Image (cartoon, rainbow, N blue to C red; front, side):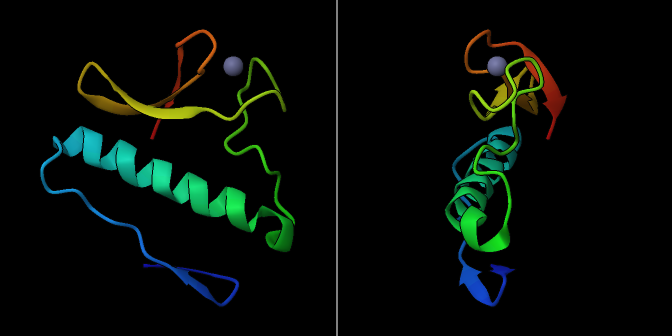
Length: 82
Ligand SMILES: [Zn+2]
């Protein structure tokens, strides 16, 4: 459960996923919540912004080499661990 500005959001854990995918899945859900809440929280609607392509697209949560990471959806390069 995440409380953002008084609004509660439920993040759902999928027990059937590998642990690294669970982390990526939860990060993706949190990303959706933050983007949805961005206007009222005065945050960028692109979060987390891709370092190489600022404001063009957000990073994508995924798993590379068994680790949950944020990657650029255009180049599929790993940007940082989650
Ligand atoms: Zn990018």
